[in-house]
Image: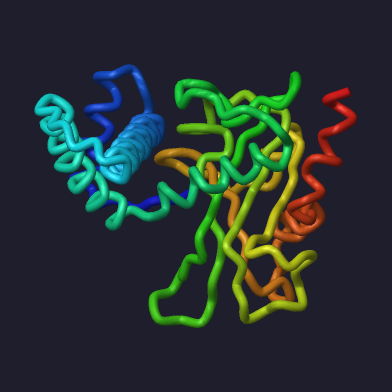
Length: 239
């Protein structure tokens, strides 16, 4: 996934990440995961309260109420952050989607890959539709840092790229899911990348496949698969 911050925010993220021994992407992913975990706990607490009320159990628990009020305040602040940066949620959605398809497990954010399925390690990148020229008709997908920050730190067997479909071109997609999907062996990743000087390489593709002209994009199209085919592609490795 690709996120753009102001230079000031990027500098502050790098400073906090360095102080915690992480790169900025890991720091942000850790923060968002913690937000979602807090939200899940809060929703579960509210549901327990509703069920207790339905049973007529109106005993007041001051400590629990105080904790819920604190959690509610945190969630309000965190949800405001997610509203400003919805791509984080989209990225986690992509990882969860692939995890469910392959029957794997999500790793911690300190790991060099997102999912483990059997003995295979899978990295997932998600991209919303982007506009390289503001106001122009062209849309593209951008999957940032497939090898990690400054092209270091990632260690996986397969890279799965997922993108939000551009509904203007329905005939070019392989299935009816809301996503376009690419399945790439680790050894093939580098030749699909455009080199980046500051944070690392990026894989990009215009959403109109009839306009694809450069070598990297043509090669990437050869890795296009149906979303449901991912399990079948890694099953020989799981046996």
